[in-house]
Image (cartoon, rainbow, N blue to C red; front, side):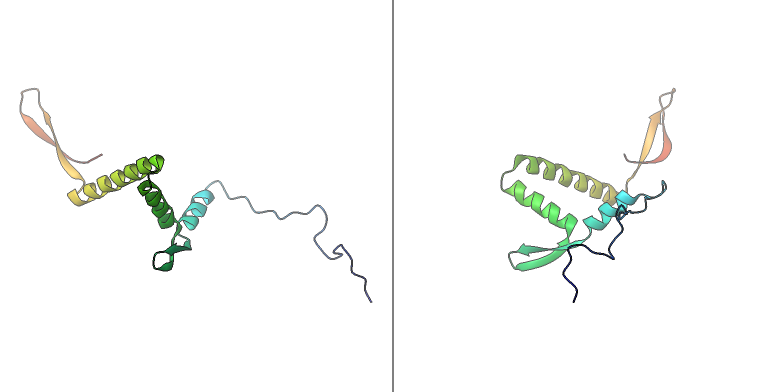
Length: 118
């Protein structure tokens, strides 16, 4: 019978490592990883029981809860995020375009054309 040995005779050769292939310069691997993690669903305990939501939503929910509890950094960040989203939605709702006019040297106003609101 074989004795129990502490080493693995058919295991990985000494010195070899698990190496991952480096991404090419044209690939944006970090962005892909961030987006995959942001939309990965996780289980969160809610008042009604466990709920599966995307990671991004869980982070925003946690931020909002901490802001409501009085965390000033969370309050400031949540207010900034909310203002940014509301401004963006308002631009989309209003159409995002406006007429820009200038005054000529003779004092009359002329329309240059439509330009996006920035």
